[in-house]
Amino acid sequence: MSDLQNLLTDVAGVSVGHATDLALGSGVTAIVFDAPATASGSVLGGAPGGRDTDLLDPSRTVSQVDAFVLSGGSAFGLDAAGGVQAGLRQAGRGFRVGNVLVPIVPQAILMDLLNGGNKDWGLHSPYRDLGYAAFEAASGGPFALGTVGAGTGVTTANLKGGLGSASARTSRGAVIAAIAAVNAMGSAVVGDGPHFWAAPFEQDGEFGGLGLPSSFHTAMRIKGMTTTATTIAAIVTDAALIKAEAHRLSIAAHDGLARALSCAHLPLDGDTVFAASTARQPLAGPEEFMELCHIAGQVMARAIARGVYEATALPYAGALPAWRDQFADLRP
Image 1 (cartoon, one colour):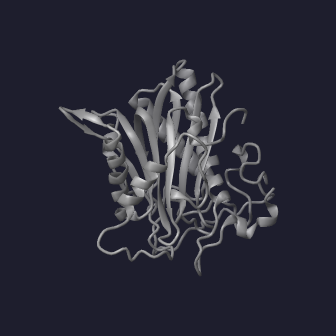
Image 2 (cartoon, rainbow, N blue to C red):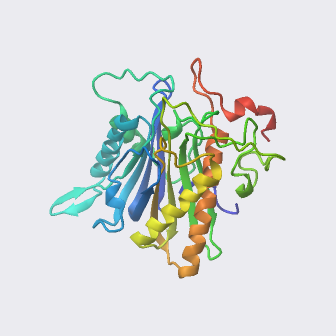
Image 3 (cartoon, rainbow, N blue to C red):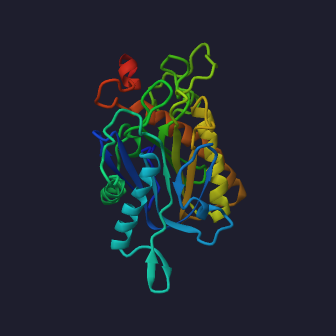
């Protein structure tokens, strides 16, 4: 990966912070931009939850955001953006309206209320405080993967999910990176085995280096119908994009969900991908933008597989096993 850490923070001007509550079985991840970033997003799942996602439509007026939030907690988790917004307000950040600054913080949530954690939090949910803690923890350096932040309580059809990330460069040197909290209705692995659907895109053994199996099990494998799911994610680049291009990049990144999960974009998934540009590098032209779209699906697929690969099981009875529990002897 040359000088890259294979993380979202490889994009200059981006910080990531987690707040993790293992007793709750949930958490929050904040993606904070050093300066307002041109942003958009797309929602292709049938059961989404989010805040300010309509604002990201290319036809809407505001084109830049201060942060993204990925959170557990289903609709209760929407309080997390308020915590990140509070931290940004303290820092004097936000969209100016007269003499008032309003931090712009789109958020996506996932359903982790039925994973066995203690959700008896009383009158007010803990997510606003978790959001503020994630903002306070945000840094531009390496960050943890697996059962952390928004990846704390996530699951897939047959294995514990997690928080993953991956990065790459275009042929002209622009950096593009993905982060994903993998709470899919479907599965990230082929059948009951250790092989990841994303294997063709793996770099440097980042999720075990096992390649593809000799045969494939293609029957649908999903969570029970009494739950809902959602993979929520962001794709970020330092190449300068306009809002419409960021929207197209988010759609291209959804290809990574289809490559890494069987199935994705189901009626009970809320699959959402945010996209942002820090505009640190000029975009060379249409060819480089198409290359960014091409790479977006690959880095997203890799981030999803890494999230499952790096996860650990939640610490209570009946928790879904992690990949490393089932296939520990295959880890390098």
